[in-house]
Image (cartoon, rainbow over all chains, first blue to last red; front, top):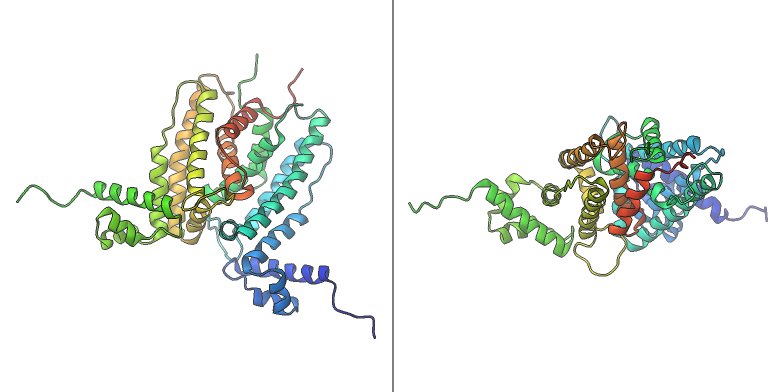
Length: 201
Length: 201
């Protein structure tokens, strides 16, 4: 006995997901082959398929992993933290939109493929919705702390506010094909914080 | 000569699109067969394929046609007109989400398939983005008239506001799977018009 046994499950998962992210960004959704991911990660195909039965399951796991990489910073200043977090979401969307291709294609690319994968398999859809629910709970908590500090109004509908901010980013990427980034994130936060109604005199 | 000639192109288009909408709602995206649409509309397959080379082209034409059916009402009261228009968008999304299926499946269904179709073919994507650009210009004009009347503030970023309102609806349908309808439309408009920042004392 040497003390070396089978790698721990968490290490296997991490290795597979890292290889899957790499391959997805290189080749796009069409080029994400679970067999090749297994080979790059140095795990048996059966190990991979036992954990992620289809390519769509693997793709949702990649999305969850990438979201966990994006920290939500709470500096105590919501006018700074909110554009910063939206900019991270935009960067993630831009990375997926451009996965596996070059040039300025305005289409949603892999972002659209991930949405379609979630719609295609009920269990993948349930996983995907769970990933977003857990993730968005953290963003809602960020907003609630700003309400408690008195930066945001006391009766704010934090869920509606966050849906509007992040929803605008997804809408541009998935539907209108317009660019998203820091400047647009700032426009969104400014518009949402000030409100659209004419100020009372 | 009897005076009856070939039907006008606009009439053929209308008949094909009506048949396509009917079939899409009945069977969902997977069940949208251009051959069956041609048969139901009573036109030659070659006529249909000349105008819409693939099922994806036909599907985008259906989306454009359905959007044209949704009137944007301007009553002169933006607090009434905006929730009403968002409710129409939500109803359209709900109809597509539920196309071809029964029960309370929270997945995006045909909405996701349409997004994927636009991402798959560059020319379909360009058509889809054009449909939304033309449509959203009408919504922007509605908001601009409310600015001119003094209901909304003079320096409002109408594009950012509209992206937030409509984007939240698409985000719920495509990503989080939560319901959209009148009550949610009202929450969105209230949140966006009042603004999230604490009111100045």
